[in-house]
Figure 1 (cartoon, rainbow, N blue to C red):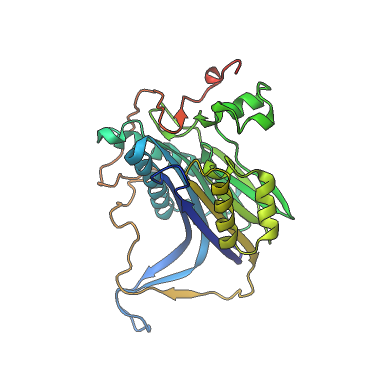
Figure 2 (tube, rainbow, N blue to C red):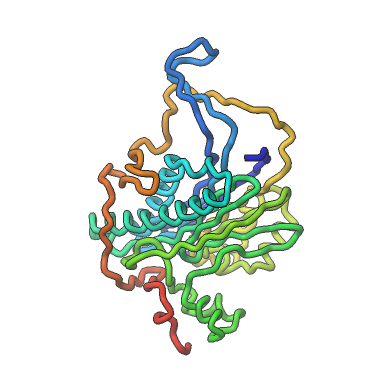
Length: 344
């Protein structure tokens, strides 16, 4: 990975109407490391030596399915993806088109396996029945960014003062717009904008992750958000905030406030990252404190690079629940043309 300076920040807020927050997000660096057992280096046995960042991982999830179910689904999805990326080798071993294609398939398999894991977990408690979540994942191996998503959590690219939406909302309203059945300006106001045609869990038979590759440039920025932002803040307002406000933290705070001023009817999550030139091209090494072995110590190592275990360590099967529609906050239906209404 070429050296790059990344400045990032993220905020999640309950909003003005909901009493709980079912959104989840993660900003992380992927590093290689050495675990020191014995040696004469100036670090204690039990320390871990980390190299510089080899990649950057950004995740946003918006849960659905009641108080416990929605929070459980979004948290589980983010934790599952972080574990699968951390324990896979594809993220730091891509030198040709074949390995790039394999990496995209790896991302898709993470979504598919996470979907099955959520479906299995939904059977463990009545409060989890029908739970599901959207998920948007961006992985940056400079200068390439791979975006995988399912649902209506978004990823934007901000380049040369222009804002571009990278993802496509997997909602009935958006599908109707693509078919010419709904005007673009009416999409956000349509009651079909809350009906998902693609998500993890929620009783759907499968998930269809959509993947996009973007060649980033220096001074680019990315912005990711749950739909609690774009329900109340237009792309024009988002662009204006990016133009007028300096620093990812300030931008995130401003956008959350704008969403709350606009009504704050849903949980609001905003994450932003800026990519700048890296002045220091020397190799670096960082030393952890003894005992910092893992973040998610209750997640077992995956059985394979394309699968993992649930939080109790039980190997995940391929069982799929029957499809049904859950009407809690958001709705979800099976992906396919047959779910698109002919008319409003």
